[in-house]
Length: 319
Image (cartoon, rainbow, N blue to C red; front, side, top):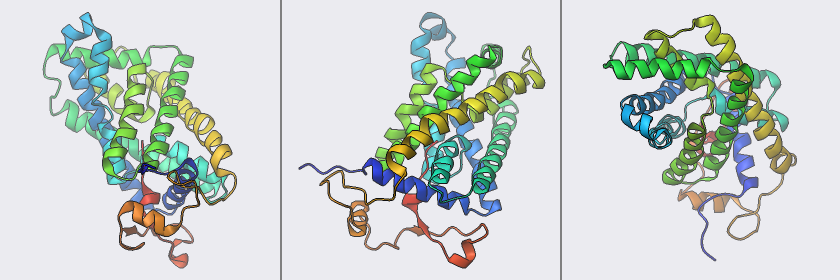
């Protein structure tokens, strides 16, 4: 039988819960720094996407679908950077933290702490890129490019409240799938692929990502939009964030918990159908010992006393 270089859904569910436990035990300082950089990375992908679209006015007018397809291909850069550098992104945490909480492996307070802190620090990272690496660095240095930055921001805000809510739902359903699939991948190439396709898909579909919007909308506001901060908050931030939460929890965490996370069980191997031993997992990663690639996470109320250790398979993240 051909070797399958990946994990079964049951194994992925186990690794997802380990990721949630590790996130819950991050120190405050670690969570803030990881989340700030998560906002920076997601904005870098959005910046490249916006530069490609803004610099292609002819293609946008003649074939907008193709322009979106090509520019959207660059957007997942941020999600890949977050995953491979092990940073924090609130929207992916909207899937993994409720999933782990449903298994009663972390408390609701742990989940709330992670989501609130990561959201606020992600926001700061996005505004940093929008202000310093976007506007002040004069990336959009032509009238055509700056005017498109304004247009795309207005198109994200000047829409019906319920539309943005549902766009947020669709977006984070794809993000949850990207997280789940990337956890099941063993090496970097597979992880990149499993992240890239779902994220590329939600960009093409026009769905809304609440964290990325903290870059995409402010960069347009810097060049002069027809709305202010109040409308941005009510018409975009609130519905898109709520939609992302619904998409991550209702379409992501709850179904996957129901299917694969309700009971602790030995997950069958996708290669043999037999229970997977720790030796099998080590061999599949090509490691010589279980401790050769460990990452210790210390923090939270019980972390230092219990000496909990979580290896990188449990810390792998997707957007």
